[in-house]
Image (cartoon, rainbow, N blue to C red; front, side, top):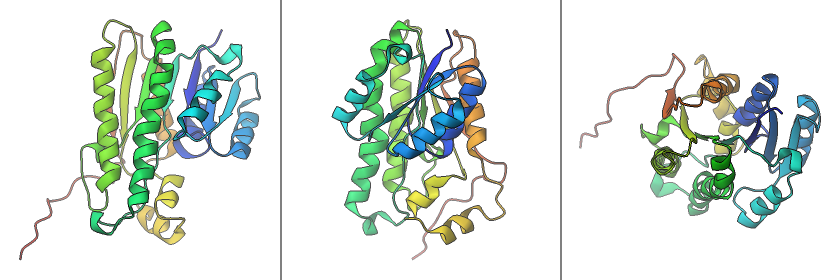
Length: 250
């Protein structure tokens, strides 16, 4: 029987590409997201219900998350890999100009939703000596103007991944934090409220990472021998690097 990966946030971007990469290698997948029509289209593209099972719910809603996981058909109940991809950013303004509701949405999605589904599935993953891959960001380590709460949530994801590794020693469960830099996906449209011009400016001439690049990295981690754990992978496009520290001179 083929292995099973559960991929959150699979209706676009990284999640969609990860699902396609795993199925191409013979895995079956559980794909989750809030948009039913996109999930159904993805399942069709992946080859139908024999290889892909859709679960439509909002990861911020614990009751809905639990109900969705309890509804899994028996053939998809044994989960070998949890790919915590669901996440978002809201806004690019400095902290003093931000909307508190946007901050709460990021925390509820990127932190609370991620830890909720991880805890619900942890016993299953231990039983199968499985894998947890958490999608963080270079913002976990490298702050930038306007990153404020988004960067804070991704720093949590990175540290939570390391904490899981510490707690799960001896259980055979691998845990990896994947930390992408500049990446082209629907993420930026969500962050800017659908501003296509801002999207185009950000990526113009930059040759950013693509969802398929991240999918390849996630699958590489999953395909390694069971005794090998990649703690974290920080990945940028060649075009992206660091600049000097910002100094305000009064």
